[in-house]
Image 1 (cartoon, helix red, strand yellow):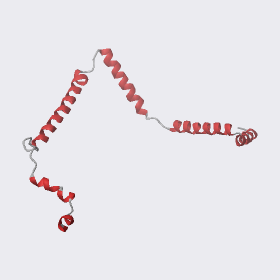
Image 2 (cartoon, one colour):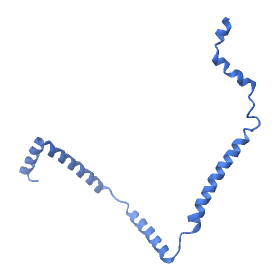
Image 3 (tube, rainbow, N blue to C red):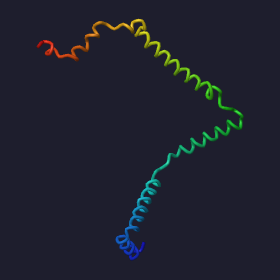
Image 4 (tube, rainbow, N blue to C red):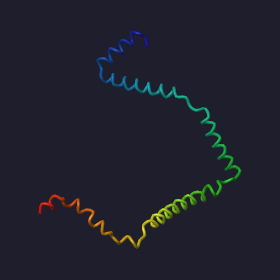
Length: 126
């Protein structure tokens, strides 16, 4: 911008808040755009994407569908593995806590909370 016009613009921006706000937004947008332009792209990304697209096109042209094990068998095996892990976890957890002993409460546990309920000093003073 020529110096005379630049001085007029600066004088106007100092007096007009609306134009100053617009100018500030424009300068922020310009900084963002310049930063985006400075980012260098990975030169191999486009090559890998294009190779993947070409492989899909070749597969559709040759009539080679996606193998069954990738489409169906793999998700089924993963689901079965998760279910087996859950079942084994439940079975192992039940081995260490027999069901027949779960209804019996030891006598020691009935006295365990008595110390927290009553103070020994209160009992000793009576």
